[in-house]
Length: 147
Image 1 (cartoon, rainbow, N blue to C red):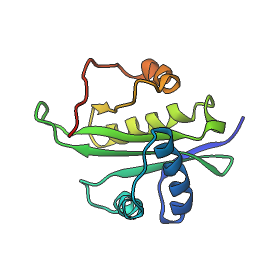
Image 2 (cartoon, rainbow, N blue to C red):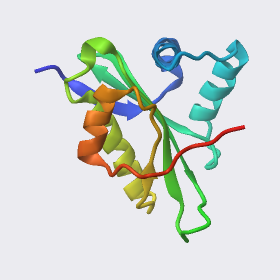
Image 3 (cartoon, one colour):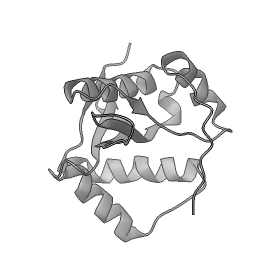
Image 4 (tube, one colour):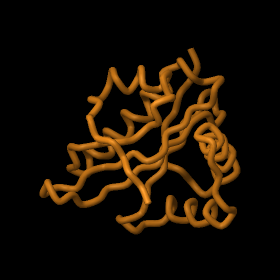
C-alpha cells in the first residue's frame, strides 16, 4: 500500500505544482499564459483570506495530485461557502483513493473554517471522476453560463 500524504502547498513545490497543474489544464483542453502560473502560485502561497489555498498530494514522496479551493461569501447564506476550483490526480495514481483524500482534505479545511458548504464543477465528459463525485457529494441541476 503506497504512503499517501496530503499537505498544504509550499514554495518548494512550485516545479511539481506546475507539472501537475499543466496536466490538469491539458485534461480540460485549455492553457493559461506563463504570468497566470506565476500569479496563481503566488496567490496560493499568500495569506490573503480572499485568495485560494492549495494542497498537494504525494504517494511515496512523489507529487501525484493537487487541489485549489477558496472561501467566499454567498448571498443565500450567512457563513462563507467553499469553492473547490481545481482537482487533479496523475493518471498513474487514479483508483488509489487519492482524489477522495484530496476532496476530504478540502472538506476538513471547510469544517475547520466553519464553512459547511463545499461545491465544485466538472465537465460532463469527466465520467471517471464523476463516479467518485456521485459517491461523496450531491449533483445539482445547475447549468453554468459564462461570458
